[in-house]
Image: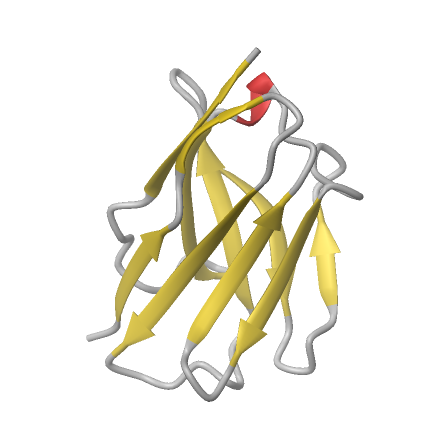
Length: 114
């Protein structure tokens, strides 16, 4: 059973930065495409970035140029560096495989004030 634990969220002013981490225990994911998702209040969960085993990346238009996804396969950790944050980035952020195969973690809250 893979357990995902997200961390690094918080309250930040618009224009600020945060770095999120996602630690996966119970399995090695070096060959799995991992993704970051977010869910804003009253909205559906959306996939915002993913990274392949070879570190190729892809981003939703809403975060492209501001967010960077990376991974440390040795430590089973996926990161999301978020820069130039906007109030509309406020959401709970989750990680999972690109298909959402694992049980969802508790997520980490990101709140961006204007």
